[in-house]
Image: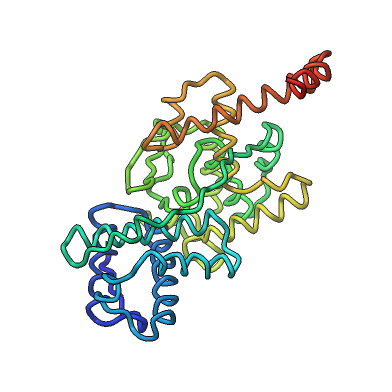
Length: 323
């Protein structure tokens, strides 16, 4: 990965150098994704902008060393006033903790004040998958001779048929496409730059090959598989806009997003009897706990079906309310 260099006006030179070392450390040694690095960058820079105004000048390493818990609380309060919710603030503080842990690890500064600050609790939520019919309706299997329609269809097939993240699908190059008869899987680079082999269904492969038939100028095998109308690698935002347009025209629920197709993939496999370990491998989760959340989705659906369909569901509810 190309080396990152920071020269933020809100920081003194020594602090910019330390920040540069941290970013390259998490990129090269922690091997976090490009999207994660960008999120860290946004979070930390917002803190330094606040801190520069808070103390009235560029930030030195000594300033960072002398920060107290009230400084971090003031930052969180400022973000709350700006409309940030608990999840955003928790992510911001997690990014800052990562930075300060690194600075201590390499003996630049030590400041344990940030660890004494209580981070907002994130409300527990479970994924909201689409129904099987809703997911299938999003996949347009017609033979229109439009490479853009074929592109969008191929992307949605990968998200629902293989459980890919949007970033994983859009990072694919032409050489990664399963173009040979013997290819029944696709190599995907997931979080932490971990490579995994994902089985690919015949319908998904058919959709990708259909798109490649219409792909404009596909002579370079190292070119992006999914491109925009100007020829560059497709932006996730375009996929989100496409989904929004389809959601409106097809009267789909609010939870119909590109990422909900990945949730639907996992949930529908679980409902079909696939074990959690297999789903974990397919999704590329490093921990089984990340996959277990889909058992809550399935349990909730079972509870809803029971309460809505059982002849004594009203009685059961009254008993529950009075217990």
